[in-house]
Amino acid sequence: MENTLLIVGTDTGCGKTTVAATLARALKKAGADVGVMKPFASGVDVAQMQPMDDAAILQLAAGLEEPYDWVTPERFQAPLAPANAAPLEGRTVDLEKVRAAIRNYVGKHAVTLIEGIGGVAVPLTQSVLFSDFFREFSFPALVVARSALGTINHTVLTVEHLRSRGIPVMGVIFNRIQQGPLDLAEEVGPPLAARLCGIENFGLFPFVNPGSHLTAQAWVDALPIKCDAIQKLVERIMRK
Figure 1 (cartoon, rainbow, N blue to C red):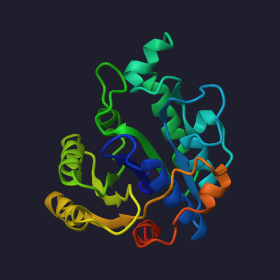
Figure 2 (cartoon, helix red, strand yellow):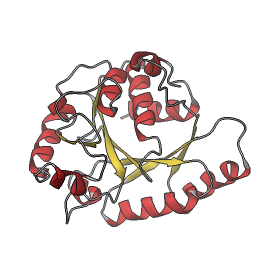
Figure 3 (cartoon, rainbow, N blue to C red):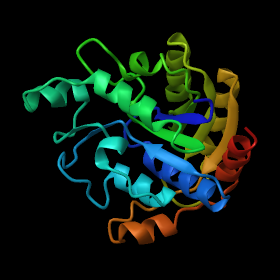
């Protein structure tokens, strides 16, 4: 399981899927056999993977067509934390099923990318946080943070929380959420955030349009796989 990377975020909507898909695509282009999972997903069609679902984007980026149950074993219709979404469907979150699915999937590919849900303290059940669940696996985590004002606080809190659960932090990548030149906060915030945490700063990930006007394939094809931050990650992973 040592070549498995847990991709987590400082919040929901910070760019985890975009970064994970770009990294998967870049690894595949570099010749790696890469697998992808998003074990928990909410706000999705629970019966069938839809083209622009996070799981579908990850699979497309990795060049895979694997069963929905392999990629996302626990999924919910309501766009809420699993702890709140599950009761609306009259059920509980089956952590044992997800645990077994992860252990079964990891090892099918040379490299496995596992994308989180929301932030690291999202409640999966009424008593178990995302970080509580993943501490048993000891997968290193890549933190995806926004590059904008506020990222120092969000990044430090996220890294400290992961460490409190014994989850090793590989580093951080800062996702740009706006186009145009860097503003002052983007220039000075990310380097200081990484320095305060004592972790590697893989750099800035360029702004990517949400792509609502594109097909899934066109959106994946346009991902910035050659950007410096992604190439640094590819080199690090391929060295293992």
